[in-house]
Image (cartoon, rainbow, N blue to C red; front, side, top):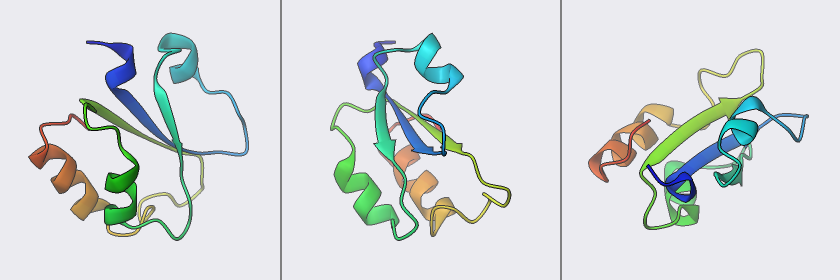
Length: 81
């Protein structure tokens, strides 16, 4: 596993998270409330192999919009979620 193939979809008031200490070369994508699966996929590097949701919200299950659709699209691209 190359660290630069690891993407963290990140929504938190804190800049740091454990994952960035473990994998300092992981790419961070800042999460936004208006993100859709299409806008997130457009922001991913083509060589993404691993995708981690790091959502620091009380009710994060529905964030981002259509989370299940995004996860299915990532799995179709052979990324691990």
